[in-house]
Length: 154
Image (cartoon, rainbow, N blue to C red):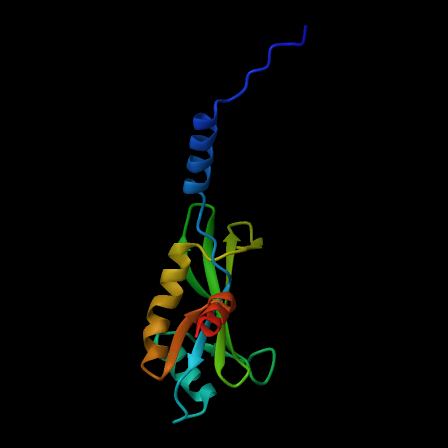
């Protein structure tokens, strides 16, 4: 006779899945795309003005067409702080992509990359930037996937 196996009933299994996925963080990629809807000024100027308006300090970028920012501390937790820097670059002629680089800096001096944008980081970084960019004719369209869905649906 085989050993008695305990099998979870389906409602219990589904409940466990719902709790696990409901409590997990919502994952958002480390960038947001903006559609350029104006040709009044060069995009680089609009980006620079928007970043400076919301308090980011610009530093030299890794490429000539990239605007980069200095690191900004967002949150201080017991053993680490969350710091973020941004990079903004044109994508084609019609879009701009803002890359968000979040890290945990531990009291030991070690840094670790946060692999996705948590809701609190996304709100802290992008809420005011969205408003500043929109006032200059750069409209948030989300990620590349959501942007492509929008154009496919049209």
